[in-house]
Amino acid sequence: MSCDVAVIGGGLSGLACALRVAMAGKRVVVFERSSEERYPCNSRIATGVFHVAMNSVSLDPRTLEARVREAVGEGARADLVSALCRNAGRAVGWLRESGGAQFIRGGEAPFYDHVLAPSTIGQVGRPWQGKGADVLLGSLEQKLVAHGGRVLRGHAAAELKMQNGRCIGLRGEGFDVAARDVVIADGGYQNDPVQTKKRISPVPERLVQRNARTGCGDGLQMALAAGAALADRGGFYGHLQSRSALTDDRLWPYPWADELARACIVVGSDGRRIADESRGGVYLANRIAALPDPASAWVICDHLAWEGPGAERHTSPNPLLERMGGALQRAPTIEALAAETGIDAGGLAATIADYNAGLPAWPIRKWPFYALPIVPGITYTFGGIAVDGDSRALREDATPLEGLYAAGSTTGGLEGGERFGYVGGLVKAAVTGLLAAEHICR
Ligand SMILES: Cc1cc2nc3c(=O)[nH]c(=O)nc-3n(C[C@H](O)[C@H](O)[C@H](O)COP(=O)(O)OP(=O)(O)OC[C@H]3O[C@@H](n4cnc5c(N)ncnc54)[C@H](O)[C@@H]3O)c2cc1C
Image (cartoon, helix red, strand yellow):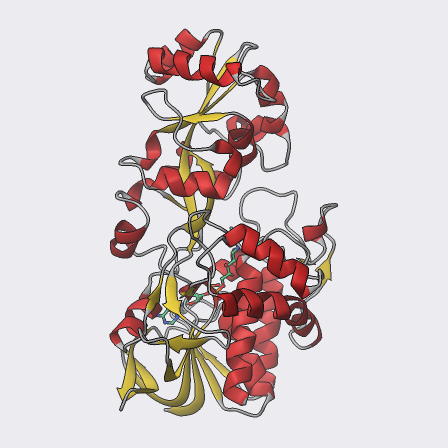
């Protein structure tokens, strides 16, 4: 088989890239591992909020750049920050005009101004069928086919073909493809226990896979074998799930305990705090994932916080958690709470005394007291294939690896860092897919 452009993975980044090159008259084939008609991937089950680091994509690029820098801190590649912010609004506009995306306002906050319709906001579980992201993937594929492109399901890419340092195609079981350019868009390595053990958590099986379970790190392995570099600022995008989600699939992606944890305290079995809770759910999820046992943390709060930040959003644990069968301990005293949970009583009492002495907004004083067993839920990994601002895969010496591009969650160098900064998975996928396509066309 031969084509101009071979794309590995049919999520948002892969399909957006494929459609854009097909519209320019190139022969493009998308190789998708899953054989299902509506194959699972993170893009398909996403809530559909297009934002840039929790800001509206419509903000001017300079303001967005400042906000993204604030989120990701030092060490993010400047060209990736700039490419994302300069192209976020344009990519969303392109998805609407050329990809058939329909956007609505999904809520009052400014970052809810571009949500895929029909929206799943306000719903729990994973009601993805017929919802915005699923509809968008269907529309992108339909338009791709109308422009002469193809999506080959049941085709897992396993190896890149290289010649004189240039990528010239790919191989999988039973197929061999010659391509002028190859785009890796396989969605990250969150489902690869070996890679996640090396980079994310000593015990990956104690994390909730808060994702479509399709990101197995194949693209990263293929790229590394071909001579590309790894850009890994560490970490993953994720949230604080109920520990019951380890055994009960109904309990992810919601409820999450992020807002409650941020307002109160998160302790380990010794009763001591684990990290600065005010830095939020993604930060806490990463810090807890790195513990010897990521399923050993608890959110501790009192009755007022449980009724306040604990019930703030439709995704909050109050009242969703118990209604869905998730574990929660409540007790009239801190001593009784420690006895019920097995948390060290002396450690917990000392931690709460210290915490209350700091006059926090949500002191732990009014009974009943609550202990919510939590575990990090991993959505996608931040580290990945090193790319430049045109989504070209880079070698260790930072020169582009001819013929090879990467887009979406399989790329690194932008998110992560000490703050575990998250910029928005959908916007990253759309922008990097589009930029890869445009460089190929040039
Ligand atoms: C529950 C949930 C909610 C989310 N909500 C939001 C949101 O509201 N806003 C937001 O910005 N982000 C959200 N995200 C994150 C966002 O969905 C992802 O970051 C984004 O969709 C990633 O797109 P992608 O194209 O890189 O990867 P994916 O969509 O994961 O696509 C990768 C594809 O590659 C295929 N593949 C893998 N290996 C191979 C191989 N060897 N050969 C061929 N094909 C292969 C996979 O089967 C898959 O179809 C959410 C994620 C989840 C799980």
